[in-house]
Image (cartoon, rainbow, N blue to C red; front, side):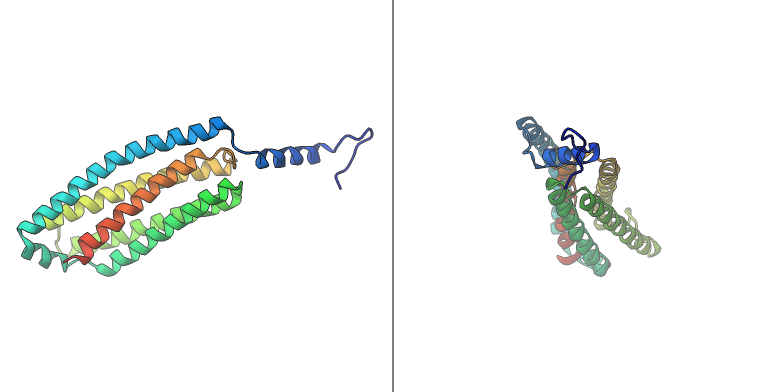
Length: 217
């Protein structure tokens, strides 16, 4: 039972707790919903330009592969499919943690959001570490971007994707810092939603890159 002061007044701490609970239970305002929809429209427009960028590279790879299939096949055999498969699993798990974090903050679970963001950052760092090991292996064998068209496109596409992973990590770090400061709630978490959409896009690009580079010989 809440402590009562003389005259029926509630203890200040209890009153504050009750007020926070009331705010958390209140539905999002129309302004907040409109803001989220506007932000989503903006990020989708940005991602459309990114699709055009990667789509051009995918098309170039397909054209060059069709023109010299023997060379592309022999060079494709030099890729480490174990590294590629593990990195695919890592990014799929990172998409799951992002989705769980968004679902948590929609329910006002700030601690769960922070845990999920941290796990996503650790998975992203793992992806980059594996990619660094893979690059090191290629460079040690003299397989450079200037070696041939296959490795030129391989480094270009995977390198551009790695840059997007780094950008995503920067955004996730910003979200984690803001979450630690209590900036997000069930009513306001638009930046988390937008960052999540971007991260899912980064994962989706790799889902296309993995079979195209590592599986289709």
